[in-house]
Length: 90
Image 1: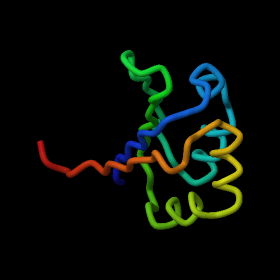
Image 2 (image 1 turned 45 degrees about the vertical axis):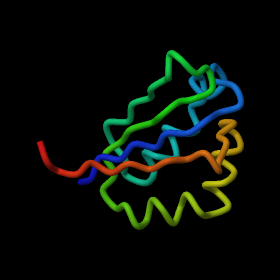
Image 3 (image 1 turned 90 degrees about the vertical axis):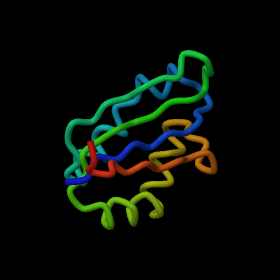
């Protein structure tokens, strides 16, 4: 199961941190071990990391209307998203 990090900017970091929608939607897609991160040097830069069992399905959801609505609700600046997938190396 790949571990994936999504780094991106948000309109309001505190709003993004308080949101329960992201964890709900990620969990519905089978994601586990969901963790959030903030950049201490840039107020609007954050990341979320999760183990995602079906990455293709997850990416399709991200591109869907529901994925877009979730991002909008969380205040994600969509064009800033950077996706990193664990390489499996040590």
